[in-house]
Length: 339
Image 1 (cartoon, rainbow, N blue to C red):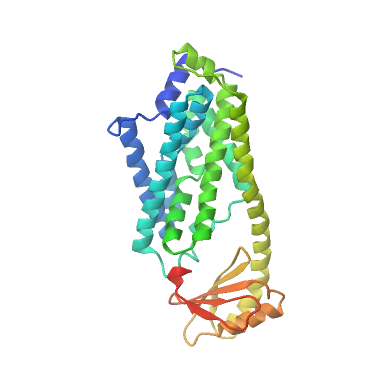
Image 2 (image 1 turned 30 degrees about the vertical axis):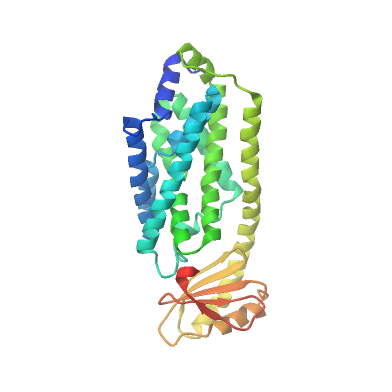
C-alpha cells in the first residue's frame, strides 16, 4: 500500500481543518454552503423531490469537519478534535433550525405522512451503518489519494448527512418527535461511520508520519482512541439492530393490512393512497369523495384479520386524521398537525 507524503498531509489539513476566524474563506464557505444546502434539502423534502435532495447532498459541506475529526484524532490534535466536533454539532443544529423554519412555513396537512423523503429516513437499519462504513472509507481514501478525488461528489450523494437533519427539523414542527429522533439517529450513524473509517484509513496510509515530515505538530496517539471510536460504532449499532427487527415486522404488518384496507375502501368507492406500518402502528392514506367510509369498520376488519394489537392511524382527504387504538371499537379525530 502506498503511503501519504508530506504534500498530501499539508493538502489534507488545509482541506479538512476550517479556520477559526468566521470571516476566513474556509469558514464563510462552510457556513454559507451549509445554510444553502439546508434550505435546498428542506425544500426538497417538503416537495418530496429526490432530485432536489440530491442537489443538497452535493452542496452540503458537513463531510469536511467530520473527516477533519478523524484526521485530528489520527494526529492526536485535541484542539482540532474539539473544533471539528463543535463544527459538526453546530452545523447539525443549524440544519435542524432551518428545517424547523421551513416546517412552520410549509408543513403539509398530513404532517408528512405520505412523504417518501421522510419515510425513507425515519427507519435506520444495520444496512445503513454498513453502507455508511463503506462510503466513509471511500471518502477518506479519496482524500488521501489525489488521483481519485473525482469520486468525492459521488461520496457526497451516497452518504446522507444534511437531509436527515432537515427531516428532523421538519418533523419536530409537526410533533412527530419519535420519528425526528430516528432521522437524527441516521445522521449520527453516518457521522460515527465516517469518523471510524476515516481514522483507520488515515492510519493505514501513514498520515501521521507524513504530517511529521511536513512540520505539522503531531501528538501521541493512544490505542484507546481506536477503542473509543469502535465503541461508539457498536453503541450506534444497538438501536439500529432494534430498528432492523422493527422494520421487518412493520413490513409484514403493512403487507397484511393492505388487502384489508383495499377491500374496505372499495366498498365505498374510495382509493387507498398508501399503507405503511411504523413501530407497530398501521398508517393508511385514503382518498375519495364524501360520504367518507367509517374508520371503525376498518378497525373491525383489521381485528378480524389478526391485527387487533396494532394501532390504526387513518389519514383522510382534507387532512383529517382518525386514530383507532388497538383492542378498541372507537376512533377519534385528531389534529393532523399534531400527529
